[in-house]
Image 1 (cartoon, one colour):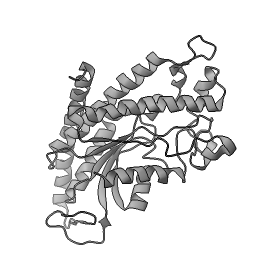
Image 2: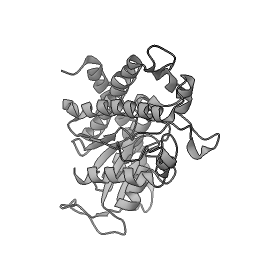
Image 3: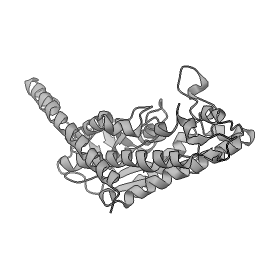
Image 4: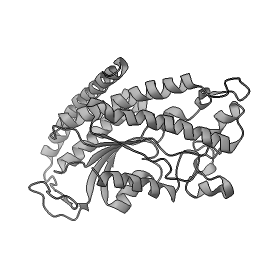
Length: 318
């Protein structure tokens, strides 16, 4: 039986989804009234390739796609013009409707309804075109771990218990983030089941790749975000980049281990974990890792395509 805080998180996710649906019911009624007043509303459908049995009534139009995706998440889905979703659109032919917003925490995505509400809008947009999303993509957790409080996860190098504070990490990953992800997944499934689909969609989640905490932020320019990791290591007197990179390897493994438990829950048999680890280099010699990493947290124009390919493979295997 699931732990009580997981049961509570599932209920909270469903409650958030119900609140979103109530708000969207009003919004859709207002929109329908506005369209009814219009003298010549536009009606259209889309042609989709790559589906063995397209929806009845589809007509050929200029718009073609290999499939629809809807997404919520952080900067791995919302990073200039090079993120994972942009790669899936440009190089794999998907049409993506996204609620993702750089800097958002997974906790905030569901607690404040912001992304959950926008995700419902995305779902409605696809369904209103007579199509069915192939999957829901979710990216989150990085902003909950990295940032100003990152140093709190570390015991000082000078301490007899130097290194990761296991109790802090367990509380963050296996309690807070697990509960947040559980609520988010529960909310997403509730939205899908309450739609005209009447069923859940495949949901893909991921746990990032191993970063190098080298002190680089976005474009290396203030006031853009970053660095997120090196300041915490410096605060606790850890100055060796290789050792710090190895430490991040361990932390990312712990995060992925938690995510891999979610599809095992009865409520989330539709969830798939996309393992992105070891996709990007962390080789420090000659700064080789900088060929694929733009900064401490984000791949660059060479790295994002490699990450997106993992998602494309996962989508093709659904």
